[in-house]
Length: 393
Image 1 (cartoon, rainbow, N blue to C red):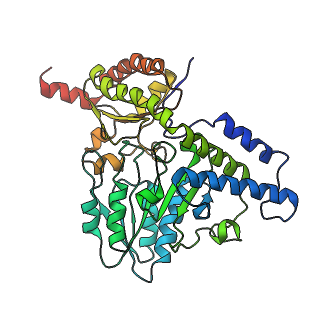
Image 2: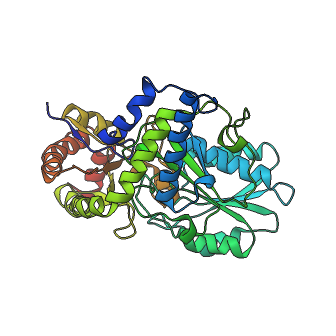
Image 3: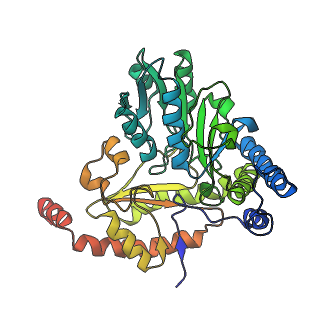
């Protein structure tokens, strides 16, 4: 069976160039970067080169990049480390209602230690209003975190405007750019952020490779205590191969971003335009503009996401329902609920995410397979039966 993979918001394939860059550090070049001998210095040079490549992707200085093992770790590091680093000034945090669970749960952990927080609402397209952020700030606010782009509905947030609000009030601002970095232009100086999280598996790098940008003047406490690695801010022996792969993927993303976007946007728009016309009661979620170029999301009424995913998989098609971190929880997406969708509609969420190499043939395969799946599931749906009764059908 031919596989049609449309779940790249969960993970992208590793670029061959990144794998080849990693290969020596998985085999003969196994030195520890903290060792003084030549094998260690070879590894250290590779880590330093990757740091420069990741910094170049987001417009940072190499000394402002700290490698982590995942986007979730980078978010935990940012939220906990920045908040604790500023707690002498205040203990209030502002985040949007649609943040990734690694941000929201980090805030909850801090609340158990005496911090307080405010959730800022979003509109029907998942957009955060900078005025709402400003309204949420108090004299005790020390940190705001709003993501650059949402992985469930594709919305690109007005990060530069929110950062300007925070800067005017002397409040640190972090953005979770995991879904955005490597896929759309992200420049920390242009955005004006103090911290930014990214992950390699979103732009053809290896899983387990990620980084946190922290502006030099920002005080942050370590999340992982240990040795002197990462400037003393992240203890533990460096994952040299993963870091090298991340660096190579970052360099490729910077060089190829415009071409990738030009190829993906027409396919994304075809999905957004045509799928609701092929199946009744399908709602596009998220905006048509200011949207990730590789992302199309929907709510299919009267059915659940889990059933659609299982039947699609039987047809060789991979997709997702909500974020990769919550799709197994069988709960309504907190993102869609925050956008004003009800529980029943939210449970029918579906996300198709594309990569460089996705083709019109892949979209046609989906269009052929998906309508009969929805028809079959609705035939078993009490919600749909009730709808037909109320409509008089």
